[in-house]
Length: 408
Image 1 (tube, rainbow, N blue to C red):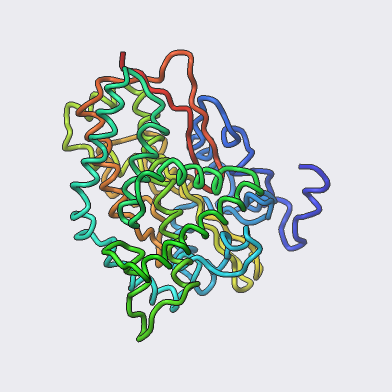
Image 2 (cartoon, rainbow, N blue to C red):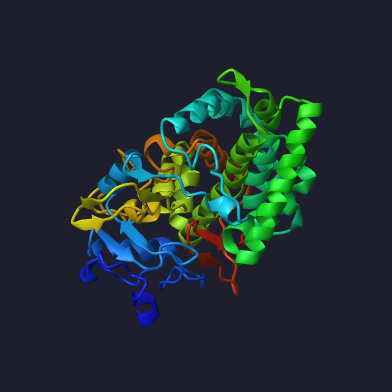
């Protein structure tokens, strides 16, 4: 750790709880050809159950990393002590408003969450299932017509996940490529590109909201601009803050999960065959791969001073709960680095935990099960194409690209 970095460590942090670990730049987490970022974080369980690093966030803020599953659940459940109010998206624009309900704490969080829960309930997700299956089949059949290999992220994972999101939000699918580019810039690019993408997203969503006020349909944006919320309509800022959450949540995380699942299965033909021989095992396998290959790190801000498992957390400290770390916790999961499609009592936190548990988890699960089922039905045994190597990324959202699969 260099002197400049060391100087940024607050005085209340004990030196024996400081490491130079970073979800963005540590070995296996920086962009790596043929990498395995989830294995790279599993080694953290050999150290303290909570530690401080000066490189917790993408913009270089320091904070605590919580490694144990039980401790992460305690943090994510306790909104009074560990606040979600961070305003990450708006700060990229030099503005000051929270994404709703993700960056709100109870009781305000619950008011908006209750408004949105019915829109992504199991019943509503079941109604979307025919469209989800049709999109998977269409994309896979198009891939097959083009040959015996594909770059699965750009040709299947992103178009599949994003087209379902566009259908839900009421956005024409002919803008799919543009939306994928915005998502990549927002989550994985330079600060300037992130700001430009955020402005483009807001401009689009504001324009769509104005159009739906004048020309309502039966889509999600029409619901937002017309719904009765505590005896009134949502204002413009509330509409954009909710729409941003759905936009970000729908564009990247499901695609990344599909990518990591297919990356694993391409390297393990025996596991492919296991699922081909027992297709009823797929829902359990999806849960296990969600445990083994989660992509998101929730971050909270301490609202008061406290001692937490020996760590002197002070008001204002950031506290990160990487799902990919707690999901490899040997105190929670026997043989955590073994991918066991028959694993029982799989209490993973791929969709977070507590009041902020992922609003779209039901839809995400169905997308993964249906997408992989249709892939297996139509694509024979596949492998990483010779002469290629996917690139993996750590960070706030883990990702994989250049994943070229071959079944020739």
